[in-house]
Length: 137
Image (cartoon, rainbow, N blue to C red):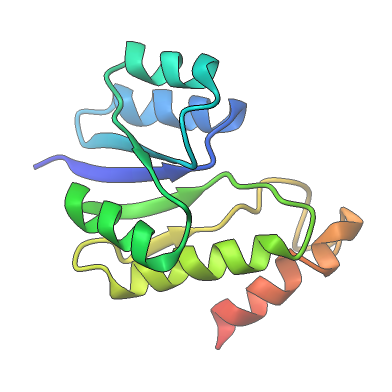
């Protein structure tokens, strides 16, 4: 049985991950999006028969999509350089915790060497570091 992986905030990097998941016989992919404003991205996904689900990124909205699609993992590509990053990722985490199927969250930590420089780029001190603390609790 193929596992469903949900991708949130997919941009260029997310497309590469999506391509690799689609190339595997083990995975199906769904995309979470705030809306249909980015028609270039949406066309890319439609051309590959990847469903796009609209969400407002509240935990209840995310939970609805995760459970409806039977997603088993959620990968975030949401790169916000303000504290809004924390609330969005807390919602992603809460939805995964409440979901019947999705118990894995990979948060958006796609920049830099976080082992050696955990607070670089500078905005990580006010965005990623507080969310890392949430994950430890």
